[in-house]
Amino acid sequence: MLISVGIALFLGFIFLGSWQVQRRAWKLDLIERVDQRVHAAPAALPPPAEWPQITAADHEYRAVQASGHWLAGKTVLTQAVTELGAGFWVLTPLQMDDGNQVLVNRGFIPTAQRARWQDQPAQAPQDPVTVDGLLRISEPRGGFLRENDPAQQRWFSRDVAAIAQAQGLDHAAPYFIDAGLPGQPVADGTWPRPGMTVIRFPNSHLVYALTWYGLALMVVGAAWLVRRNDRQASSKP
Image (cartoon, rainbow, N blue to C red):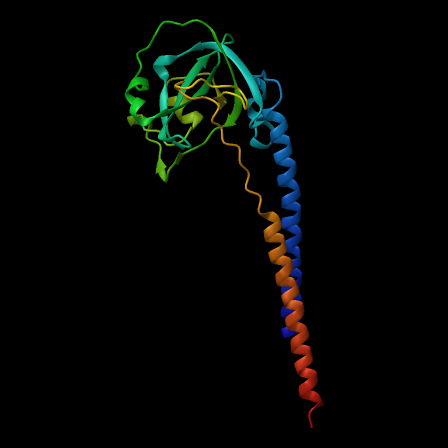
């Protein structure tokens, strides 16, 4: 019975360790791909025909470019905590020439500027603008352990579908854009502050793999000790 349990534990720990090795290889490949995406020249947005196939693995953090005019009256603020402190992301729809809209995270503002950006009046179409940034995947539901409340315009995550419905955007892309690209200079005092996308992928898979392999070795060591003790006990008169 003990032998069967020991073999099962050993094989289980070896399996888990090997799985973490595979996960580590996948994570390193992801980090390399994302690094290539963010430093590539901005490309056009995925067209509506490709929207159903948008995935984080294939599209997130791609450098993109979009042109149109702001729908300032449909701006929403979502809570944020950044290296600059607590505040909000300013999300304004960009009305594009093809009739579609894309939400643009124009950047971060401190809490003190909330009144300036919230409940902006509807304006006539302004001059065209071109936005360079990183494609981001929608953040459904909520954040900060709280649910979004569209009726009260209280947003805790950048839930594209919910924001589009609340703001009456009938042709909104299922993703949003973080304005600003890595390495682009930002003048002091610029608000909203673009270019604050945090790209971080925790990679502790090697530690986990060594832990599982270590446990497998402990099982072998324990089996050896049990075997030795049994031999010693049987050799005694």
